[in-house]
Amino acid sequence: MNIFQMKTKPHDIERFKQFLEENFICIGWPGIGNLQGVSKEEIRKRLAAEKKVSGHKLGNMLGQVNCFVNAMQKDDLVLITEKNWIHIGIVGDYEYHKEFDNKTDGMCHRRSVRWIAREMINNCESSIQRLLSNRNTICQYADSVEQSGLRKYIDKQVPEIKERESKLEGLFDIAIEILGEELKSSDPEHRVKAAIELLRLKNDLM
Image (cartoon, rainbow, N blue to C red; front, side):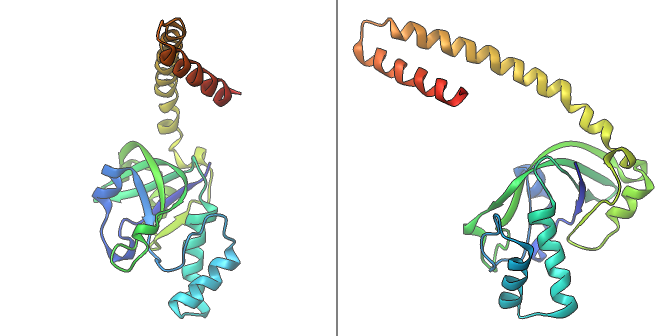
């Protein structure tokens, strides 16, 4: 698990509130298409063609886009800041939202986020405070999660996740019982629908 800090103003539009309320993060750089499975070198070519840049400027752009697309992975931690606070989240896979790939919205490169904690910046390890002071759109923490002092927030999620899983298992058992009763129905259409649904569930679990 790696840690990343991100600024909340992609494409020069402040989206902090939107990030928290809609549970996602994004970067700018519209116009370079879907980057799912795209290599760093291909990202370089697309940036150079779209932004008409080269040298150091291109390298800086490439580093940030590639960091979001390829370096960041599902279940990594992301940190965003609000005044004296940081918000800590666990990210999902890279997603491309074509409808936002324009110069007005500029937020087509996205990842879902499950926000798990909020902490005062002054209470964080000095290494995390230095990370947050980085001015790039996104950058990666150089040390381990253990050294960051953020492990405690991740560990708190385990009991909650197990509780949710237990509730889902109970509901699943009830659903199976209902379908079983439907198989005994006097209505042939009900029996067929129940059988189809049970077969679908069996395939999903295999």
